[in-house]
Each structure stands twice: as structure tokens, then as C-alpha cells.
Length: 145
Image (tube, rainbow, N blue to C red):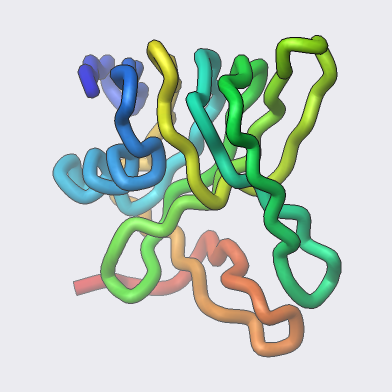
């Protein structure tokens, strides 16, 4: 992955074969990003697993053939003192039909271009909500060490 920044904005270019979640999480950790948004992303996934939240669990859908990423967005927070990513994607297949959902796994195909906006001096948390069984974004989790 290659990265450049201007103030609180980062432009990232992922390379063919990189694991999107692992690489983005590692980037957030290295750069000390504790609060951010993935504003947009375009490119291609070689393969991916997208989830649909049915109210009690994610139902996974495997996408085994390359698809164009026509939209990628989400948030970067901290949970258990590690980066916590929540990303959604819209993918277009060879038939030009869209499929989308929560990114559970994704391998970059050719490239992926991503704009990240950070909130310096802030930490977003992601505590587990017992009532929903999901980690929800907490914009004001309090001070961090």
C-alpha cells in the first residue's frame, strides 16, 4: 500500500493481492488513527465476502470472481485497543449487476484507491451493544491512555 496525506486526509493505493482489512487496519495502527472515516474507495476485488445483517447475525455471501468496487465507505474506530473497521461496499460484476453489504473479507485485485479522513485528537470507540449483538460506533468514548 502507498499513502500520502495532507493534514487530516490520506489518499491510499492498495496493491494487487493485498488483504484490504488487514492492510487498512495495519495502516491505522501505524499512523495512530483512532478516529476516521473511509470517505470513498474504488478499484477491484479479486474475491470478497460481504455480509447482510439479518437482525441477529451476518449472513455471508462469497464472491469468488473479480468485481469492480464502485463504492466503499465506512468508519475507523478503536476496540480492544486495536483498529476496528466497519466498511460497506457496492460491487459490480461482469453482468453489470450490483451486490453490496458489510465487508467481511476482501482481496484487492489490480488496485484499490481509498480516501481516509481522520479526526486528530479524537478517539471513536466501538463497544459491544448487548441488545443488538453488534459493536456500535461511540463518538465520545472518553479519554484514552
